[in-house]
Length: 585
Image (tube, rainbow, N blue to C red; front, top):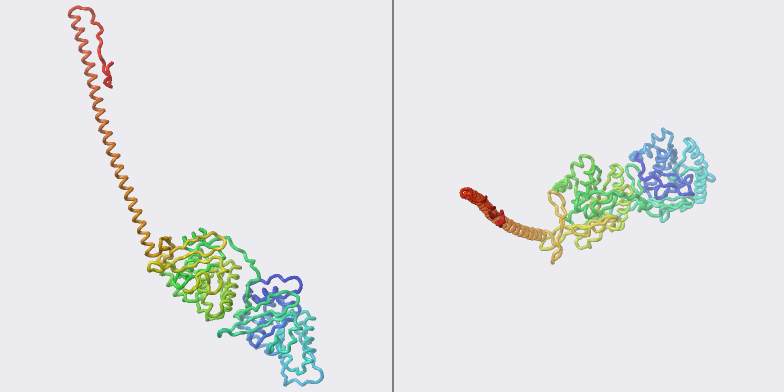
């Protein structure tokens, strides 16, 4: 037997309350039913009164250690046991554990012979015995109409009805009494609701051939409670009451950022991607790539080892996997690894509330970190804009309370304003990515921009994106005289810029080569001049040496001649010395 999702909020001071354990009900009543007091559960046939009472007892016995008793005036013990077995309630086991007593009181008008004043003293004795047999804290009487069907005297009936409610209150047991709804009144006699401390009205309505049950707390003495009409479901694990709105925006906002799987999109979102636990809307006209974008987010989450729950209302699992593989996103391995679970169905399969309950249950079972709903606009087939908006509001609040990132795709009509959604949930979204076709030069190309993203700086640029076998790639766009350039115009602009860049590069290379040539010519000229200089220098040195040698020889000859004439010693003959620079010394 599954546990309720939402823990019962602390009961306010004043009336003590007994939690029912019914999913969602304790949240809207802020704690459950009034403890030790009678509660009337009324409604038409088939709206779930008996089931409400039995689940109240079963949850009390199994979750809150409070034994209970059922006094049935319509169905016998065997019928009650079998009717709730399909919901996972094993009444026989609880009876064996002395946590539950089932008692059937047969009331048949034809078998009753009225004599004297009729009263319920005999019933009170039987109730007291039943309660005392296991120390019951809770009791269910099903139903008042069957009990009082044998009483034609209206005056006695009303008096005994008051005695019954007073007796139950004096015993201090938390009682649920079921009653049939009257024609235009809550009950057939119009008295039960006045003597009850709490009145719960159950209804079932059919709209567009889809039946939905509703619950409303009509009266609750001594305490505040939700006054809205709440849809509820009877599922295989019991009743689920779905609050119309969250009771408060008290969820924790995560500071963690997660990648979208598209690096340039992460850059547009402040460079770090999305906030974990935020709500993300992908809107656009048909064929703009909303599902492809969401699949990239799914693949990125699975690569991080996180679980993703994908609700698809237009394509089957097989078709989605095949289509995404064509753009380089292979989701099949993640399905096989248990990281990705698809829930595919047409939205008309269930009513809105059943879809919401299904998502709740799947989230409880699978524990995802991301939930994708693709697309939310298909819900318009089974509800009005107001109903779909209310349902999505509850879903978003539910996901945020679990810090689960919600990704929602929305189809926008071609003739409608793009910056709105058909289901009116744009204000609930933290991040809104709008994809659209950019038309120009005879082409339609896809463009993406961030319409809003709370809590982060984000790009205001329009980016063209293309899908190929390598996935989605964001491209820069060009602004020209005719507007934003995309597609072939962008390619032509890119080719033109590449040609211009190449021409500039070639011009630079040509000038570089000319400069090198001039440098080489200059070096050659310098080398030639240096060689000429060195030759002249060498010639000068040779001449200087020859001159010095000649002077020495002349000096020697003069000395020899002087000695031959016996003349005086040769006077010191002045001579000229030529240095390396050609100057005379």
